[in-house]
Length: 248
Image (cartoon, rainbow, N blue to C red):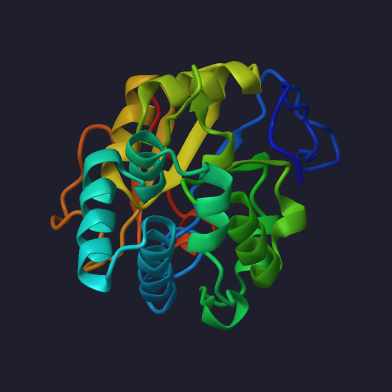
């Protein structure tokens, strides 16, 4: 699986064997954590512990100071690594590897039959995640769906003018569209984080909110914002085609 550098081409056939053209192929941008798998069950705790340990090691801080700094940078920038690079000159790749240096596979949990359901979804599938590349690949491999994705944007690839720009950056979303070489109306972001969906909708993408009550990024209400084209409780609800995704 590669980081996308060029427009994608059609691959999935229509019913009856006729291929969709590049002009009408749906492109699905999938978030990873709490979208394709249940990261609140075990992985978020492991990430928090590992991230704090990485801050401690990188800056020679004690546990309390590292926890406060990690939390502050995450809230301020949306990713701790940005604050570490911007304010302390830490190498991003080194920190990302250090902060996710735990055994991933035993902690991955997903809905039953995810791989089979995903195969039924027509269109191209791209991963768009603020997680590191190595971690994301390992999660997809554990889920048995790595081969179903045609490309990946991880936080390792999210650089604009030399700075890390993860979701929900509007500039990132525009860059994604440019690299895909596709009209925004063909692209659907499937995501658990509302602010990321809002930005995607602002640049013209369609949106699906995977709603998990009580998780850190879900939003506390059950209503549907104008920028949410469809709300589902699991990826399977979308993949089984029970409801259409509202367009522009």
